[in-house]
Structure formats: structure tokens, C-alpha cells
Amino acid sequence: MLTGQALAVFRKQLLAWFRQFHRDLPWRGTRDPYRVWLSEIMLQQTRVAAVVPYYQRFLERFPNLHALAAAPEEEVLRRWSGLGYYRRARNLQKAAQQIVAEHGGEFPSRLEDVLALRGVGNYTARAILSIAFEKKHAVLDGNVLRVLARLGAVRGDLRASLRSKELQNCANAYLDRESPGDWNQAMMELGATLCAPKSPQCLLCPVAQFCKARKRGIADLLPEKRKKRATVPIRLAAAVFADERGRTLLLPPPEERNAERLVDYGPALASNLWHFPTVSFNGDPVAKLRSHLRKLRIQDQDGNLQFLAADKVRHTVTYRSITVEPFRIRVRKLPRIKGAEGVPLGEITLLPVSNLTRKVARAALAAAAEERTAGVC
Ligand code: SF4
Image 1 (cartoon, rainbow, N blue to C red):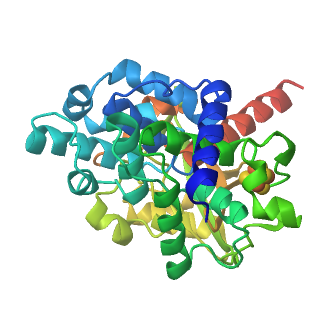
Image 2 (cartoon, rainbow, N blue to C red):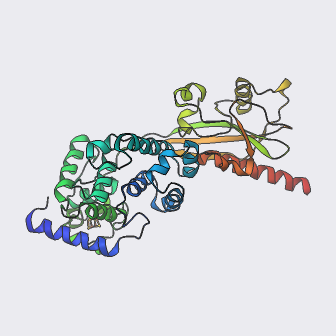
Image 3 (tube, protein in one colour):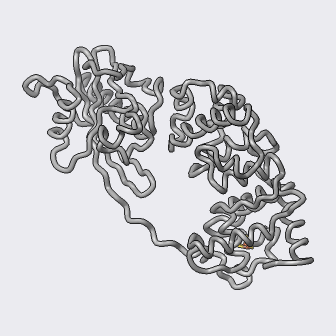
């Protein structure tokens, strides 16, 4: 741990580097807690480059907390559509409504109040409070953990509770109390750019002289890898109906309390958005899909529906490796199911849908195009 003069130099050099070289991102430079909060939620488990256009489009439609709180949930999900992990969007809106109801629409500035908001954890609360309100809270995300582990040449599992507490203490001790917002962003920026997981660029690092891992030549080896959770394969079959006008059938998001019961592939599509009729299977996907459609009360008189296979779609959600087999089913008229919607297959994003559902639609459209070409030849 650095102390005294060394700590002062360390802080000065890191802050100067950050202020001169930080990446120009749309949420940098703002102290508006709503914007800081939005960026932090969008950045959870999502790359910066993917977040930028969503952040800007979301703000165009919901420029402030009141606009977000008052909007229909479906519209919020539509603006989030494609970014993944949709629980974040639902929680964001619920928290906005909480702020309107409990804090008169003013973003709270006390740690306990921010932690009480839906979807806000320790890291996010500290990031918002330090950046928007200059509160003296040090953050500890994956980037900061890596920087601290290398600076102190810390071995072992950083997420182990005792180690994690020590590292939070270390982050607190390093925090620049004059500029906590810039300081937290500087530590994260260092981890996201020069002190990246692979091949850290120690020659360019503004605090290289304080780094024990660099001195020992083990920067590349830290943090030590944790054991990965085994991948769980999930196989799904999806029914992509197409009527004479090119419209398809999407089912609404199951209500949360019924999700597990109604949707046996719930864990795979935890985002619970609009989706094709889908079922998990082990043996024959068509047989399983037929029986699933019967459960949904979709008529298949004497097995008349034809199931035309499209290319398989692969998708990964954390440790789940999902393979979907889409089957196109041509019908004169779309089946009528309570709550379901008919939308053009090429425009399913008119409703909030997940990336997986988009991929299934693309596979079905490609199969239909191929069929048309084959017909012409
Ligand atoms: Fe990271 Fe290298 Fe800087 Fe150490 S010297 S903090 S390993 S970039």
C-alpha cells in the first residue's frame, strides 16, 4: 500500500493522465446524476462501443428522469431492444418512478437512498455519487480490481470475500478526496485502456513506477484466473409463422410470476420480451413444437401444419449456450391467441424483442429468400 509522499505522487500522475488522455465518451463531462446513472446501468456487462448509440437514442426519447418515469414500459423496452439484459431497463424505469414518488423527482445524494433504488448495487451507487455529487466513495469494478491487483501484486481469487474487503479498503485509501469523481473514472479508465486484461501497456502507464506486478514481471499473469462455471447447453425449437402478407406471430412477455410455469425455456430467455412460440427439446424438435402449439391452443388439424427448417441460431447468455432451431410455418391467416400480435417478419422490432428473437427472425427470412431464389431457378 502506498502512503505519504508516494501516494500523493501516484494520485497526481494518474489524475493528470486521465484529464489529458481520457476517451471522449458522451457521458464524460456531465454531472447530471440521471445521465451518469443511465450510462452506468447501460455499461453493466456491455462494451462501451455498443452502449454509445443506445445511450444517445435513449436520451433523445427520455431526456430526464420524469420522462422515463412517465413512459409506457413497452416503449422503454423498445428503446433498449438489442442491448440485452432487459431487467436493467425495467429496473431503471421502476427506480425513476421510485425517485419521483419518494424524492420529489430529485435524484437522491445519500448512499443509503441510492442503494435502495431498484437495480442499483454498491458499485453503481458509489459511481453515481462520486461522479455526480463528488461524494467520497471509491468504486471497485472489474477494471479497478485488476489495477489494484497488479499494483500490489495480489495473488489468488480477488472475489473471495476477505480479499474483496481488503481491496475495497485499498481503493478507499487511494481515493483522491479532492476529486473523487475524476479519481474513480481515472482508475476505471486505466483498467479499461492501458491496464487491460491482456498485454498491459506498462511502458505508457502513468503510475508504472508504483506497480509491483510490473517490477516482478508478472503483470500479464494477474489477476489469477477463477475457475469458469461449466457451460450449460440449451436446445430450443421456435415456430415462425408467416401468413400471406408476410406477417408473423409474436407472443407477449409472460408475466414475471408466471414466467417459470408458462415458459419452460425461461432461463434461456430471461429477458422476457416478445418472442416466437418456443419450447425446449431433447429428441424430435418438430414433435415437441407441435405439442407446444397444441398447448397454446393453436390448431393443427390432423398434423396439417408444415414445419420448414431454417438454419440453426446460436446465442450465449453468460454460461448458457443456446441453440435455436427455427421452423417456418406458412399459414393463410395467423392463429389467434389472446395477447399475441401479428407483425411483419422483417419488422419485429416494432415490439420489444431480444437479440435472440432477432436472430431467429433473420434466419427465417434468409430461408424464405433462399426458397424464393431456388423457385426462380
Ligand atoms: Fe497496469 Fe502495467 Fe500500469 Fe502496472 S504498470 S498498473 S500492470 S499498466
